[in-house]
Length: 263
Image (tube, rainbow, N blue to C red):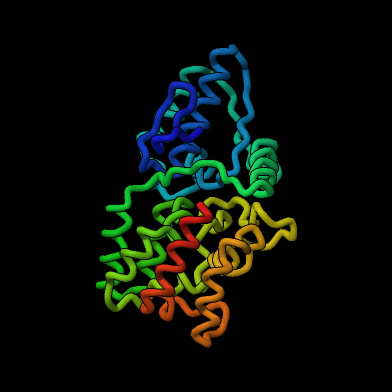
């Protein structure tokens, strides 16, 4: 559960606002183990859609990651409680919680409303990482740095503050993919934690990459109309290239307005 202040709150357990989804998933496993101990169960099966969390806890990931304090604490608690714990991987779309969340999202979209969402990452951290990657002109480094932020990057791509920051940078050849749709980092959970990357607003089981979100998803068609008109007036092809959008002040403003309306 994410609070209005951007913190993860799980029945008395809290993580700071900048915590990654992986850390939240580990805390969820810990909470399930604690609940099993309180109910005096002999064994417990914890279902999770995060394969990385399972790999960390069973020791299949890199040894450097397995020495993490959180991982060691969870393992010790399992030993102390004398529980037999089984970790079961389930796809995001196949578990009841995610099905209910998707159903709610689709229902709200029909009424033009969206559930509130607070970006659980510090914008200063994002800005600093982007600046370093632009200076070093390294596509590989940029992608690795972005992925370290977790799936929260899905809210970083089209926001007004992010676009303002991009417009103020020079030599951003590594960043155009985020706007033009050449990158699949946004909301692509299959590349981040082994989960689903299907668009929650479409029934066609299409991948929700940046291009789909900005230019194709029917959910945002009405909010996109003003941006489409501006592109057509300039005789540009749709969808426009990211560099064209950012270098044109008017188009960038239209894209920012579009991003604000869909939030």
